[in-house]
Length: 291
Ligand SMILES: O=P(O)(O)O[C@H]1O[C@H](CO)[C@@H](O)[C@H]1O
Ligand SMILES: Nc1nc2[nH]cnc2c(=O)[nH]1
Image (cartoon, rainbow, N blue to C red; front, side):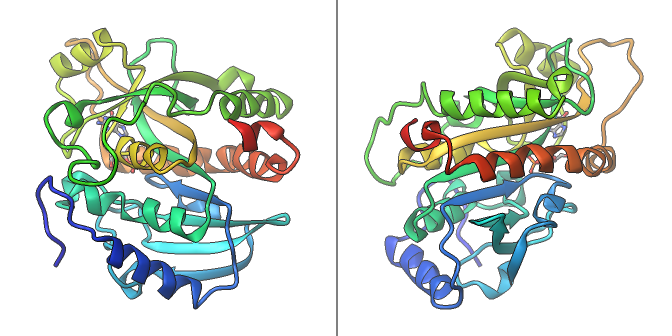
């Protein structure tokens, strides 16, 4: 049983053991890691030379408890690029500490990963967003962090800068790729706000988050990005808008997880095209190595 609470619960020895366990069982040496959000495990479907580990078989790894999160760590290639995909992520509301939620990011760093692409499903607060849009995350609001739920509590060097967590060059590359693919009409940039969940927002909460400058809201991503930035990884964040969050008491629609998964699955192919093109280009783009 993993410990809970907001203190750090993963020792360096644990991280090392898990890394060594994986590296002794795979010949892949990924430089890029992808975290698949709710219903987005399909993003790993078309990679070649696949090697799959179930989370429950990996020492110290948490297990997935949320529908739409398969619980597989998948190594493989996109063209000639060695990658690792997390088919399923961990959330604070599952009862895991943020230290445990972000444990895989530390493993990726120890394995030699340099760039992490974090995807999620989120609710659109920006009134211009439509269901099915992809939001390139340009910044975030760490709401649980304001209340002391922070993955860096008790871990590593203090006071890291977060104003540039999402690489400007990687965002530009993604915008360029989206335009080449003809997707410009549904690719946006915006600010993602993390709430702890597990409930969806009340209307008053949604209004508050909107006023605070959030374009979309979800229950993940920020801890992984915070740890990734802290340990020197380049970060790209892609958020799929699976529903519009109601800011209006007269609206009757009610969001639910099944709808979130349905939209994710519908748009996964489009997101996969953007993602695979991005990964394929990574060796050509100086941006990816310098940002
Ligand atoms: O952020 P991901 O893992 O994509 O999942 C999102 O979808 C779930 C709600 O439907 C929540 O877990 C929310 O965070
Ligand atoms: N908090 C939150 N998470 C989500 N994940 C997908 N949609 C939503 C939403 O509307 N709110």
